[in-house]
Image (tube, rainbow, N blue to C red):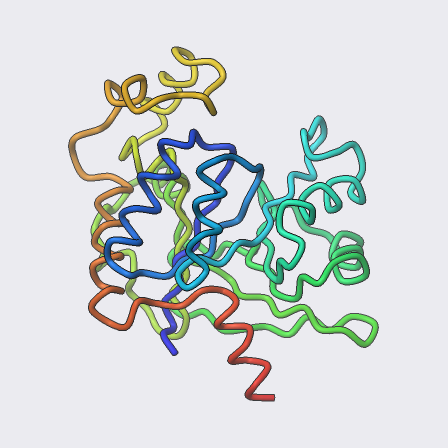
Length: 245
């Protein structure tokens, strides 16, 4: 099994950006785990590719969340999107022991990918044992919008993938489409098109960055994974861990 995992936080992205990102992967036969925030026609198209795409949940526990007013409401909303979800990454990486207790009691989710360790040289699985149940924690080491905010962003795969053990990447469809090397194009698009989730290709195209950016790393990673068996989903990592016990 591949130890390189490509994940995607949907984050209420426009359907055009979701389709664009999915097509880059599907055309290469590359696997990915998509953490969903909402349903849409583009999300429905993701469901039609189960051989490539795993769907997990991306619950927003922040105040004012459109997912619900309480943690229970948020989880219930997200589980209606993906009733058989086994993986989670929380929006804004919100974490606490009470939240994990709720996840383990209320959902079938058993693998969490909410721990970001930017550019960590080695990632290993961690068993979070809690009241007779185990939540497998898979850290991740690279995220497109976090890279934008570093002192010296590096938009090459060699730098991004460097290290041992698991290599776990996180992208956002809007940043893959815009290829944003910083937050400027994204913020400009948000100001110009409301609601952002309804933006069309024609509306987004003027804000696309032509130099190196997230799409540079994304396509290089997709090509790399296509040449090495297609990569792995979070579910694949979890299943391999279970079988090894």
